Every structure is written in structure tokens, then in C-alpha cells.
Image (tube, rainbow, N blue to C red; front, side, top):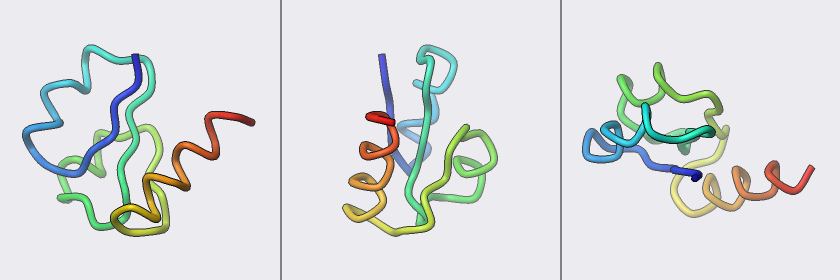
Length: 55
């Protein structure tokens, strides 16, 4: 399972997934927990994160 997100609500998924990433505009505590933080905000960040899954 994969999760992405930038809010505290998403943080509860962190311990349940293999890959957790967030966009640049995520809340600081989320960015500190994420394995990958995109340099892009919002939807551009999500697209960036998804593009790395295909590498």
C-alpha cells in the first residue's frame, strides 16, 4: 500500500504503508516523517511522487 499526503489526518497511515511521501507544502511534522518529500507543492508534488514510483 502507498500513501501520500500532507496533513495530520494522513499521518495516521504512516505506520501502515511501505512508502509514505508528501508534497513540499505538507505540514512540518508530516515532512519529518515522510520517506520522500517532493520539491513541488500540491498536485505537482503528487505527480512528482508518482513518477518516482515507476523508476
